[in-house]
Each structure stands twice: as C-alpha cells, then as structure tokens.
Image (cartoon, rainbow, N blue to C red; front, side, top):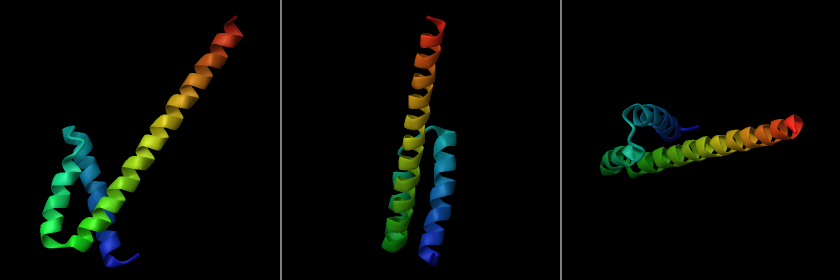
Length: 80
C-alpha cells in the first residue's frame, strides 16, 4: 500500500469516527472538498476508503437484521 492509500485509509477511519460522533452522515463530503483543493489523488483515495467502509457497514447491518428476523421466526415456530 502506497503513501496516498495509507493516508486515505487513516483519514477515512478518523472521519467516520467524527461523523458518527457528531451525527452528520455526509461530513465526509466536507473533508473530501478540503482534500480536493489540495490533492485530487488523496481525495480519490479517501473517497474510495469511505465508500468501502460505509458499504461494509451497510452490509453488516443487513446481515444482522436478517439474522435477527430468522431467529425471531424460528422462535415463533418453536412456541407454536
């Protein structure tokens, strides 16, 4: 992993932490604007990391919700 990718990764991790803490789900776009003014390459690496992490989060939420529904359905069947 090159310098740009490492920096993009670190910035994405920190940005998501702040984003979660302040409750602004588009905060990363503000960070991307700041980055884009200074380095388009770093902005692209950052946005890639953000997208991947947010997509992974959504997928995990989906999996957890699906599992909870299946478990609930099974419990209902056992109780009948």
